[in-house]
Image 1 (cartoon, rainbow, N blue to C red):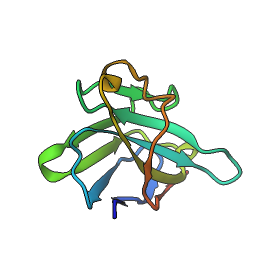
Image 2 (cartoon, one colour):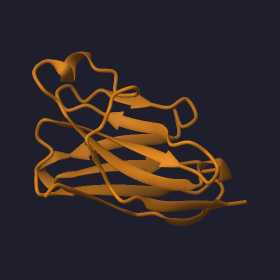
Image 3 (cartoon, rainbow, N blue to C red):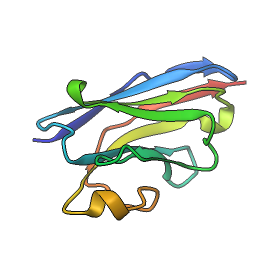
Length: 129
């Protein structure tokens, strides 16, 4: 069965950095666009970042643009989220997500609004003041 496993979450002080990793098992990342969502207590789940399969395009929520960087290493079957300049508003459970691209969808789909088929269990990120 397909499984996405996140790691790298933890507690960090405001202004610090964390690097999240997501490794896929049961499949490779070939043909998949990947991304990250997060959900903070009392808030709805929101899109954070994504990277498409075919072209390597990246997408970011306005709230993290310039601070977070998503990347992927297909050889390692892993996607990363480098988070810099963290603030308490970034505190949330972060979920790795995957989407299989079919046909030309990799070219035209805006991953900020796309649906994702695979979700990890999440990893907690807590940013203290």
